[in-house]
Amino acid sequence: MINITKLWCGIPGSMDQLRYSRETHQKPVVVWNTTQRCNLHCLHCYSKSENLIYSNELTTEEAKSFIKDISEFKIPVLLFSGGEPLLRHDLFEVARSATEAGIRAVLSTNGTLITEAKAKQLKNAGFSYVGVSLDGIGETNNKFRGKPEAFELATAGIRNCIKAGVKTGLRFTVTRYNLKDVPEIFNFIETQEIPRVCFYHLAYAGRGTAITNDDLTHGETRAFMDYVLKKADSFLNKGLKTEILTVDNHADAAYLYLKLKEKDPKKAEDALDLLKLNGGNSSGAGIACVDFNGNVHPDQFWQHCILGNLRTRKFSQIWTDNSQPLLQALRNRTNHLQGRCEECRFLNICNGNLRVRAEAVYGDIWAPDPACYLTHEETNPT
Image 1 (tube, helix red, strand yellow):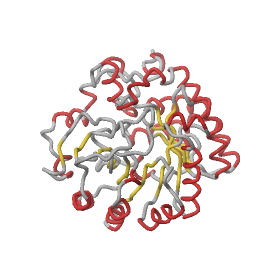
Image 2: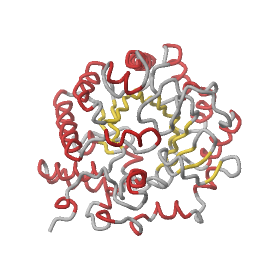
Image 3: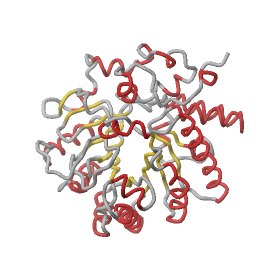
């Protein structure tokens, strides 16, 4: 995650201690896909979720055992995801076991099922943050998410969370399909007084591989980033406290630095120091995923790369197994990256970007990320 508000505007963020410290990658943030079932059918869903009853998902007791292990392992954050996690019958029970064990619990949801009663349950379970996925305004979101009134239901869910006192933000995956809605999304954030928004770049995984051609061009991505930076300045000038982040394309870090260098060289160097501490993409190091069936993955998009299963070994054992070749390589990827990544001067703040995109396009996890929009002159100036 690139915290635009922190790096561009100099305003502290809610998770700075995880992103910008020397201990950033000591223990990973864990994404837990609590269930594969979902009431929507989104175009970009990495888990290919359907509104079906799936078999073999972790039981309540297995989930609590997993949570006990990661608590003892000192995992800082557990992100409850899906599918749609609110369709899991014991969500609030297992979430409470996490928060009582000292783990920060956050929720990723489509928001359509958050009634006033559910919002109060989220508060009582101890969720510190709820991220609601919204990929456009009105009909744009409804088509993207495959359900009439998805926008209206999600908007109601956001309001119910805010009313219940649960910090709530938006998650927006930007594509050519919904790029036109970005200005309206910022207006929505402002009028609804939403404290946080994460703009996700498209990951080529699951159903997301089928809409790769709908990803932004490099020129469109640059224009999008320019607009986000402009809106960050606008929010700052208005005294708005919304935290703005971009996710899943660490070329954003280098682009922000280059833009900041033109605007304020001293602030640019300060931002660069923080970005070096962050280190860029951390799949297999600073982030991990446990899926519906207990399989452990380097991140949530790499569902086809299984490192182990909770039913045979604890997460802590799987994650610290130094004999695992993929984990070794991901944690020392500068020795493996190929092409333009090898000589890029921003490798120490990008770390090769999202490997799953390289694999999807080139069939090689060490090829350059095709979504890197930096020019050769920017990455390798003479």
